[in-house]
Image 1 (cartoon, one colour):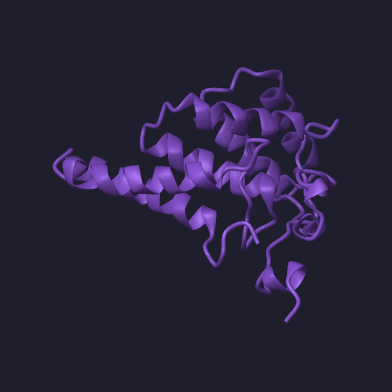
Image 2 (tube, helix red, strand yellow):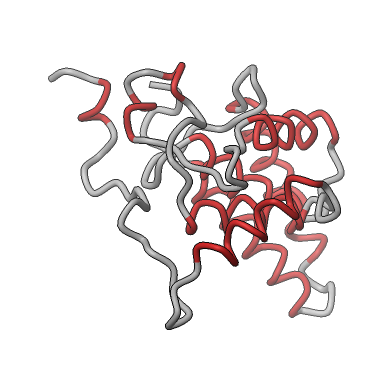
Amino acid sequence: EPLGHSFLYGHAIGLMALSEAATLSGGVAGEALAEPVQRAVAFLRAQQMEDGSWWGRWISNYLAGTAWVIHGLVAVGSEDRDLLDPAIRFLLTHQNEDGGWGEATESYTHPELRGKGPSMPGLTGLVLGALCAAGEAEREAAHKAVAYLIRTQNEDGTWSDDQWQHIFLLPDYFYRLP
């Protein structure tokens, strides 16, 4: 199990919240938040996989985990290219031909399946947002993702979420026997 009982996107959301708190306090909280932010970034650095991805926990899986971590790192102003560039490469190399991203829950038990699966609008939106936040909005991959989202939108303005993979059981059930 890559992360014990922790979950990465919770850390990413924590970084985003700390960034927002510093902004809302007019920078007053900035100094007090520097050490917690550094500790969180160090934790994320230690958890990054060799291919640049991060493992997910409550949402499938490597694509979503990686996108959330990029959002968190960017929110606190991280310009650590040693963390961001491999993560961006991971996302870009796992884009599907149709412009979207998708991943199946089987990647929990078969890491070789990370980043692979039929495209899903929700996951595509999350990955596209992370790429844009990291300054990658002008890449062809971002344009393809926008086209995918436009093409797959329903007449009523919604997107199908029947493939969006939320984890309702602890992922331990996918890769650990009692």
